[in-house]
Length: 64
Image (cartoon, rainbow, N blue to C red; front, side, top):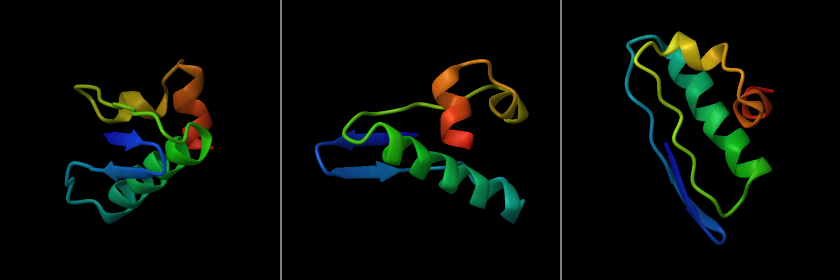
């Protein structure tokens, strides 16, 4: 989750026990901030791998 307002934001991720997944999640939230500075984003699915294959354009942009 990313909660942003103007030039500040707080990003949170759920611990997964898999460092690579956690690093990807942090990078993904930073991608949202870079692309949509000042707004909030809530990336969540019951199955975390579903976010990786999301059809939502802004999720794919943040992944990139």
